[in-house]
Image 1 (tube, rainbow, N blue to C red):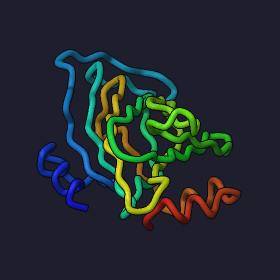
Image 2: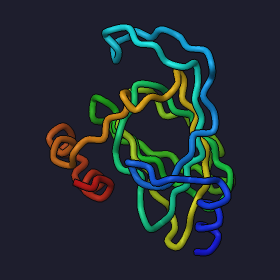
Image 3: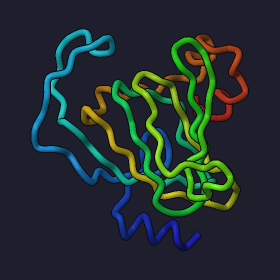
Length: 167
């Protein structure tokens, strides 16, 4: 679609390792020391970061997790389904979009430590969203598992894991 290519160029987006396209738009100048169950050793992270994220029906955002909460904001396009599996193996999903009558939500926070993936609800569609992470995102906190390792953890979710992982 022409509009997708225009958004990639206008917003200067690059391919993201999990799928889709992104550009960091904000990184706070100040940082904070973080230590909790996901960071047993103290680390420094910016207070907050933000990105544009473009997803198309030609691809998906593969299952991954980070050590921070990630707040998704819907900007433009069609609905995205965010799939989540918590550490105990409970599956849930939310639909991010602008059609409130259909139960879509314009904003959603994926909790830290949750395995999550995203895909377009409709074919031949796209969505431009924003993602805000606090404490700020760092690729050291990003985990993109193999299909095999997730299937070992959550065999009961084999269909969704197989569909939303690459290897």
